[in-house]
Amino acid sequence: QSLAKSPETLSAEAAFGALEGWEDVEPIMKTDDLMAPLKVIYESLVTTGFELVADGRVSDIIRRVAIFGLTLVPLDIREESTKHTLALDAITRHLGIGSYKEWDEASRLSWLQSELTSRRPLFRIRDVEQNLFDFDPDVVKTLMVFKVASEQEPESLGAYVISQATSASDVLAVMLLQKQFGMTKATGKLMRVVPLFETLDDLTGSPKQLQTLFGITSYIGSISGKQEVMVGYSDSAKDAGRLAACWAQYTAQEAMAKVADKFGVELTFFHGKGGTVGRGGNPALYRAILSHPPNTINGRFRVTEQGEMIRQNFGSLEIAERSLDIYTAALLRERFTKHVEPKQKWRDQMQRVSEASCANYRYFVREDPRFVPYFRQATPELELGILNIGSRPAKRNPKGGVESLRAIPWTFAWAQTRMHLSAWLGVGAGLNSENEDDRATLREMYEEWPWFREIISLISMLLSKTDFSITKNYDELLVDPELMSLGDEVRTMLVETRQAVIDVSGSKDISGPHVQLMRASSMIRNPYVDSINVVQAELLKVLRAMPADDSSDLTPELKEIKKVRIDALLLSIKGIVQGMKNSG
View 1 (cartoon, rainbow, N blue to C red):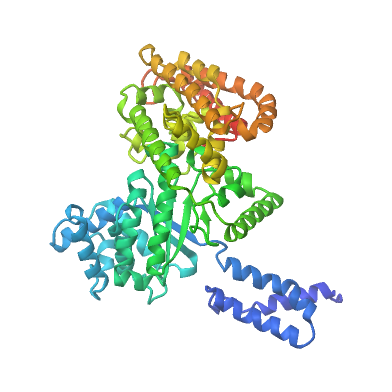
View 2: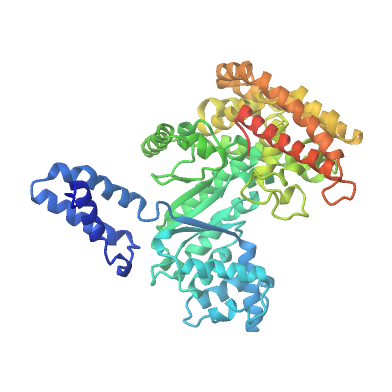
């Protein structure tokens, strides 16, 4: 018995029939290869009178392809400059021409320029793959990253970001390694190389490094008149304190923009900000963009969105659309806004503030022998490394001190105890002055300079979230008696910093312009978060008293108890993060 086939069955068979032989068809890898037939379809529909169809889904697809390409988002690669130095050092030693690592900057630049213009490869790639040169495994890993990148379609990759960049040779080193693996302008596979200037010294020296780079003919010829530079907010603040870092970022961007303009290069700044104030974040996104230094955005703006900020700003369709609206509106407004140019006396005052703030910050963090032990005892910093809450190791160097700690756990740890020290340490020393002219100038800067006002307003918001009783409870439960005095000194500095901010802003409350929001928020939030902080301090105390994981004293029963307590600690960390709206 035969049954008539339904229209749905017939259309399905036709669809599957149209797919026959798909295994023999090369996949589309380039946006242009997909865009070309889409435009043919669009123009055909318009020509035959089907404009409504053409301007519907076909137009939508064309727009999506134009914006997202075939990869949705290109992948950036990020690696530390020291990794490239070690790789080139291994290569130069193998070639018998000396130690790249021990060469001075001039020697490095001379050799790099020579090799960039040479047609001769440094080595055969298969020899490295088979490790015939007996390179260190880390060196082979660094080189193999370039090999894998060279095998991808150009549209799949974006920028190659160099962490801890300090010199022009750091940029040329990556250019040379790309050339070795066939990633050049001629092949269309050259990734744009983006130096990330992170510390105070690196930011200060960044204009000179750009000057050197743009003076190299082979480099200028390869970048097509465009350069991207990443500005590190997190590590510079950890290195020098909030105020000194902010001023270094401001002056460095100004100076780099002038260098780029001199050489006719279109400069784009990539702002490496975290979600929190201590890492360059600003909840008032619109005002934050408008307060950037003059002539440093010009309609081009890249910024990192990390961690919980991705969910907070893009977690739902409506919120994501709103966030992109704010970015777009701010960039358009910034392009036509007449910026306030800081007066010379404001610049002089910021230099004084920066130096005093940096000196005070570095004294406590680097020179006071009590600080590191106190930090590790009074906060959950040590425990953060064992919790699965980060994308990278807590430290660059596991044996190092605070200087080797990544900026995220540095900020995260202080936020957990409600001290928020990373956001305000050194601020009071910078703003306080016995000179009445200094105080008057600071008040004038707050009233007339949006950039300075935004910084002070954000610091006041963080200061309003600090809690003396909570931080003191952590000290009493976790800190050795001989270190307790440092905790008292820190809380005294906190009082002085609060007063200094109030004096500059002229406000009657430390919350400043955020006073109504902060009062309402605190009334709702604090009763819950306070109890979580108390529980967390107790958990830290009992966990630290338990045997280590590799100890014979850790019985199966104790091991299970420890696991439960670690889970509870993780929950307490998440709870405080949500309550404070400030993590790492």
